[in-house]
Image (cartoon, rainbow, N blue to C red; front, top):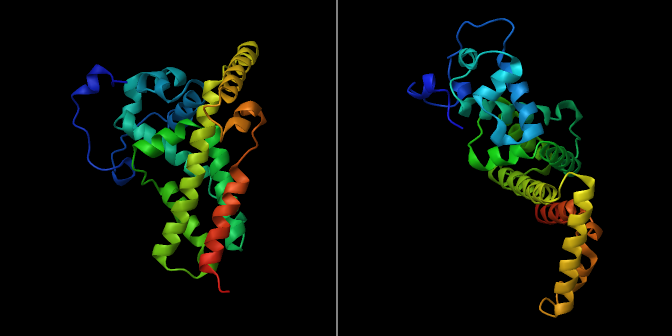
Length: 243
């Protein structure tokens, strides 16, 4: 969504928001933190497309231009929103000492955060994240792998493999959830219609290898996150631990 016309011609600063010292004197009742919290609340309720300088300002009962004492653009706001969630996913002292348990804990926290705020995946795939909290998360991934005695490059490859698996799961489940209407009556009708269609496709004989899954329908299919994570960690353990 476009910025207010009064800011359209404003030169955009170079570099990410965290690398700049561009905060201006501002009202004590309005803080960068309160702006980010309001934006997250809007995204959680109405989706990322609903977040704009104007909508956040309206939620805070301030003029849109008031926000520019705290950030320079909507891009800054989106980056700050993602970094705020990243900070909430850091385990810190609760990180297990065992590398496998630590990766499981991080992956589950990442999954839970992603499913609670599915719009965050949109930011992850569209923007380069360099915020301080995001860097803390990355540091924790590598810290979790210290007991495995792997090189820095190997640790990074392992961390990205587990994270990519987790983000892929969140993306798939979030898409499935968006497809189902929120109204209970409409959701029931949607499920019935989809299951009828899948049963028809199963009986057609055109998809013999997935016919049993089609007959079961989406609702009967078990959650794949934990077994998939276990398979991935089994392979990592087999490759990087002594026989």
